[in-house]
Image (cartoon, rainbow, N blue to C red):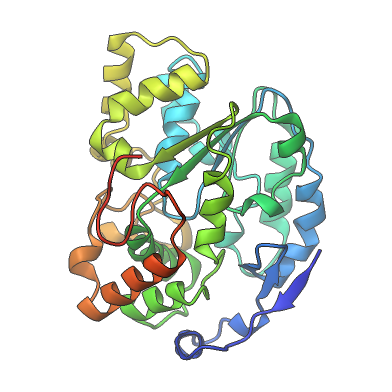
Length: 323
């Protein structure tokens, strides 16, 4: 696999690296054709993941971090499992809907977690529900051959940058001492883990019309969750009654998700200290970037969107519109 060490070429990247007390960011590498930024240990699982057997009845969910993958995972799993409310409350989502790419976010020190997650993915009974944050070119090659059902979740990148900052600060690296604005500028410089963002989204946007692909947006889920539930059920070839949809809407409400211990990760990495920003399910809002980022950072983000945005994409730097 093609790899290249991450270099601090831009001033934003240099400032980003200096905001870590000990994390060896300079040891991160760019992987694959997409140049995805990942820790060096990814080489130890890359081939195994790329060669993971894909099954015809798999259901895959992919999205850039903080785009709504846990929210959508809960919806997909319940629709595909005949609204098993007890299972959704008693079995943690990470077991029901594991991360095939190894949840490498939560452990910078070793391979045990990644190997375990791949073991789980390989040994799960069909139909499997699997999710990933990696770009398309680093996922199992069998996805393009078997063409199982794939759902991609996308979110306004301005909200992604804000939410990713909180994830990074509270879960991924206690060593990060920078501000939210500094993080957002590093995001724009494609210097954070799993960058570059636009390549990640574009690969799935370009195949959104394939019969085995469903492209969802966080904003449409916020706007009309019932409609999205019905669309996903149709995609998965599951019949839901009006009552089913209403029950699922209540289960997927922010209040219910926030309080669901089988979904909201409250204890990992020392979180759960009473600060809602320290929970995996944080606030479920759209547009918080407007009051959390400085005007100059917003301007940098929107300039970046204008220069790098995808032709025909469902939003631009000035407005959000329905896809």
